Length: 367
Image 1 (cartoon, rainbow, N blue to C red):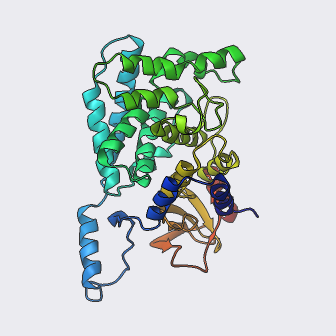
Image 2 (image 1 turned 135 degrees about the horizontal axis):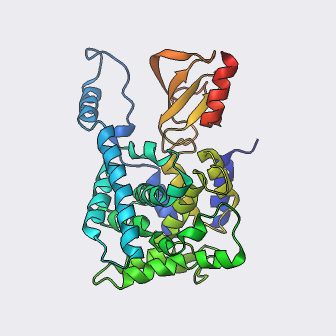
Image 3 (image 1 turned 60 degrees about the vertical axis):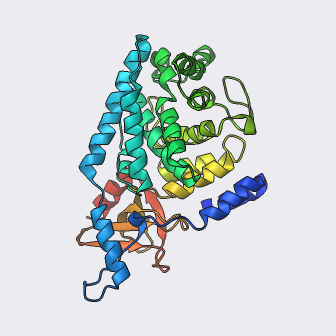
């Protein structure tokens, strides 16, 4: 069996990253401590070490607020709708609210809060894809930016560019939503959307040029076969390279009018098969490190035949996340909460990722 980790190592070796990238990769080996990723042993207060008690207290104070994240995600969807209406009607766009939203998402992700990713992988109606896609791209791009070592200012710019990256689709939305393969003429119409969006932004006084370039170049590809200009490699704005990678990953992991969705695992394998011809290999590697081969919220079957949901990822061991066991080996729902950090359970491994449909099928088979 070919392992994704082996493919990735081979791609990185073949691509020969520049010295700058090598330096950044060394930094990735010792990431800063994020409280949300620290697993506290289940011990009584009497047996916990002072340092563990301090970390537990800090985690409690910074406990993820599901309702807050849910409201923030919903706010993002509403802002996208308002943005597209304004763009279509050529009315002034209210950027203050969008910038505030991006800043709030940046703050959450910097603190290690992963709750927003539970909404990232939620299903949405094909006709609503553009709203969710633009919000999801913003969330995931900021997470990748963290992996690249961006400061808050850079994260805010990248997040804003990702939020706006498909605003030009408003001009060709009817064509893009057709439930069939597009003709060459229709595809050429779709290819105009980056330039259309960038043109709107370029007319706004004092708007960041880095964001305009990112929106214009987000469909360019490393091999020069993207659009609208066909530029390649280092000619492409780095924000655009991040958005290009996330854009494809988000699209693959959700249904479209003309196809079903890929599991996160399948999406990563598909993108890796493209090698360094389409994506910046360093950015693709960081995407995988940040979301994990088995992302938060995804179902997995363990070698013990137990089934659970991934609740956290281990940056240095993407194949061994933290799993909340939901069903035992007989397919019965577990009565007690049991959490396994697979980096500490070397005799247990993930047998395979599962879709929602596969989980339902397996449970019915074992009933």
